[in-house]
View 1 (tube, helix red, strand yellow):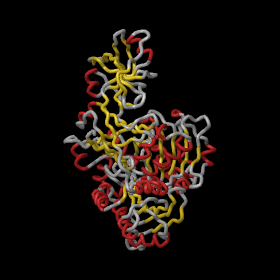
View 2 (tube, helix red, strand yellow):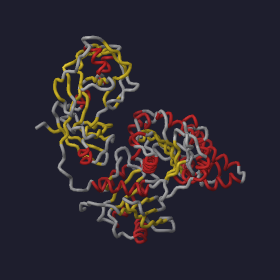
View 3 (cartoon, rainbow, N blue to C red):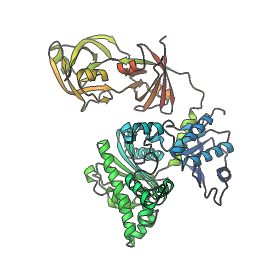
View 4 (cartoon, rainbow, N blue to C red):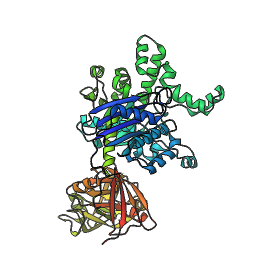
Amino acid sequence: MSLVLEANMILVLNCGSSSLKACRIDSVTGVRQGASRVERIGDGGPADHQEAIAQVLEALGTDGVTAVGHRVVHGGPDLVHPTVIDDAVLHALDTLVPLAPLHLPANLAGLRAARGALPDVPHVAVFDTAFHHTLPRRARAYALPAELTERHGLRRYGFHGTSHAWVAARCADAMHTDLRQLRVITCHLGNGASVAAVEFGRSIETSMGMTPVEGLVMGTRVGDVDAGLLLELGRKEGLDLNGLDALINKQSGLLGLGGASDMRDLEARAAEGDDAARMAIQVFAHRLRKYIGAYAAVMGGVDAIVFTGGIGQNSATVRHRAAQRLEFLGAVLDEDRNRDAQVDHDHPVAGIHAPHSRCQLWVVQTDEERAIAEQTVSAVAHLRAPEPQRTIPVAISARHLHLTEEAVVTLFGEGHKLTPRNPLSQPGQFACEERVAVVGPRGRIERVRVLGPVRRACQVEVSRTDEFKLGLDAPIRRSGDVKGSAGVTLEGPAGSLTLEEGVIQAQRHIHMTPDDAEHFGVKDRDTVEVRIDSAGRDLIFGDVTVRVSPKYALEMHIDTDEANAAQIEKGAKGMLEATGRIAHLVRRPQI
């Protein structure tokens, strides 16, 4: 395949088991040049996906198409970024079919047919599960025997990730705030429905699990249900596994409660007094409100709640019911704005909160096609001929502390000024001659180095090993984020100082200039993964924060425990390859 330098006109394909949706979209402007839909594949319509692809391409044309973006329902634990498709990726996806047996075979059939029909342009898979790969272990784990979960890869993955990511970003735009400063609950409500807790730009909880069955009440899916109830039904009704599968996926949800899977039909019947339809709406909204409250608790508060999807965008009734009794979160619905809210591709965002609402409420038009187009362009950009890679110094940060002017006086005496010992790699920073003892509940560490210049708040940075010695629990934080952290006592030659807070483990991070960030394709506060290639100690470090400023010098900082784990020595340098949001660091000897 030849290198592609630009990719603006994207063909987006969403291939289901019996249907195919397609559109041509300009990834820059979002303008659609056409759309096509094929139904009943293999059942009176096209014989197979290859024939369906041919129909779509004939309807839309391929002139000017520079890449094809495919919606793929499941990427498993490893495919977590938009990925250019080759035979190796197809093989990897084939192995994931057991995780999504209803969806992945159709996705793969459409992908293979499209590659055959358009072999000269890159094809990119965009995964529904990808946005949720940042779920912490506590959120993705099932409380099953560990040997079973490990053997079968059982964990919570989440779905609708492309939509959740898109509407969270549009909400932040409407609030004129960086998404990385917000706590947002996104509610994707359609025939399939899910909620996500998006904390500072990262998905940390979502209602769907290993499959799309878990969570909210949906069109035909049951959502959360007592597993023991299913066992009892299987016994009493004589249902085998296939029967239970059909029950929870195709016969339950709104359909099972109210006799219809479409919320519009249920609302019309409810208006005429149909009690079953009313019950279905009430259960749907109750479950949604319960998840909103739970996710606000998980994040310690919420700044915005977003409604999207066919129901979320169009049902003022569901939004009203879901927002009831959320005043304790500071979320106050404006009933008139809620009833009048209408969104489309030209006007994708509408606020429905009252002016005094601390937590803002938004209706946002989801646009998964445009999101897929933009992510396709991002993936294709990495097909460019690479620039020469930049080496990255790896700094091992031993325990140290930063002091305020007042603390310096308390510990070293009136009029004392920090004495520079040697400059550090970051401009303006230096190690000092001064040292103090750090005293915790269980032990003490002598002669801990002070770094300068003075700061506005005291901060003590320790390793996990140091925590055990001191007898305290220091949270992993970015530098400067000491609120609510551990306390400690400092002892200097002139006196002692007790800190109520200030002891942290520094989150591993990479300092970059804006030029470095552009080179590696990352932004300030992005989180990347770093691969360490060393003699017998290869490791992948996750949760590495990118910090970008013109005042920085390019360097990665890890603590002594991390350096020992990867057998990194002082002076090591690395090479970082940015692939989407993953960074790979390969150890190189210092020259």
